[in-house]
Length: 522
Image (tube, rainbow, N blue to C red; front, side, top):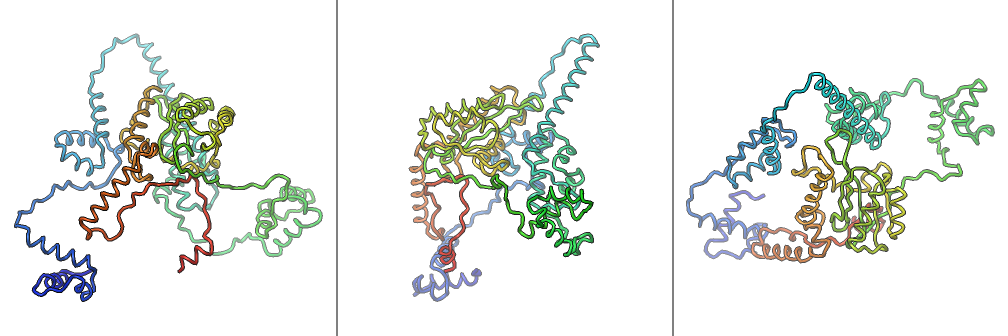
């Protein structure tokens, strides 16, 4: 980087009498032409500016520690609402950005405070026995709702969890720890206690607490540095292989070998040791009539236009009763990111799935020969009603791998966008109609106003109906004109405003060929 004295010498020589050309100066001082042009122009601007008293910009105090709006306590919310009420529109924008808030947060807090100031109507007291009975029933109802919510949260945790993670001395990497902590936090948020949630994954509360203190850090143990004292000797390992490959036992699995040896009064090793030794010596190949287990990724789905690949999923919306939810069924067009259909139901079943898809199919006039519908492996997605409906309409179904949410990323990302909007209600929905009304407002905003980052910041509706090309071309012209007006500000090409032509769902991971490696090396 050039210092001020060096730049001053170049500017003085460029503006003095008998000044050489800028190209000659660039070669003489080993600087780029754009840099010299910028230095000369900056010097001319400084000389031409009159003495104007400096005005200090408005600078809000930096918060000590940033917190999410939902983590603010009542006193902080009240102070923010009162302070925002005294600001002008120009000051309010800086205030919101500094505090990490949206106007929707202030509006929600203001409504909650006003509702809390409403007078409570005085009711006539009934006899003491009836009041006591009502209180006991309400207490029992709250207890049952809490137990039901905990059961539902534990079932979800067991379904999404990686299985039993227990075992003394077992190691867990940083990514695995962070994933487990996220699953447990979700279960606790849904109403489960920490101890039952940890037990579902085979962990103790102390282990979870230690991981939290370490922020999900990696296991810092570097051992073992010595071999276990009970390790099999090479002679014992060879004896295990000899017995497993002997004519008497070579057709049997270790599960059959170990009991038969025990019947003969012999114990050599456990079944797991037999399996481990055979695996290490590459003698555990599949030889049953059944097909071997395979772990296949879903086939790649490619979309070059609307209504070619749809993705859909179901998410839970909280109700006022613990453990009971409303179910939002949502279909998304992968190419345009447009929400095709979004309906709230009171129960989760295959009939609702088929009904929603048939309506969306006929409303958009889809060509069944070109549409693929991708979803998870849930029962509403793979139920007989839904599959028969897709077969009748000629639509090709596609499913994710069990327990792998990354195979359906577009729907998962959409649900995350929805539930983290500042307008998302902080309180549960009271009725199915209320939930549907809020979802309709969100769908209208998402399809018509939201500029999606993965489709060059145009709205899903514009992309779905082909109106994005004109907007992107206009943006490109604006950037070209800006670079033409002030070329010194553009070191490289302008921003890429070309439309996204191909969108892939579950893209294949291809290995680079030898030609690709050679071209990269060259």
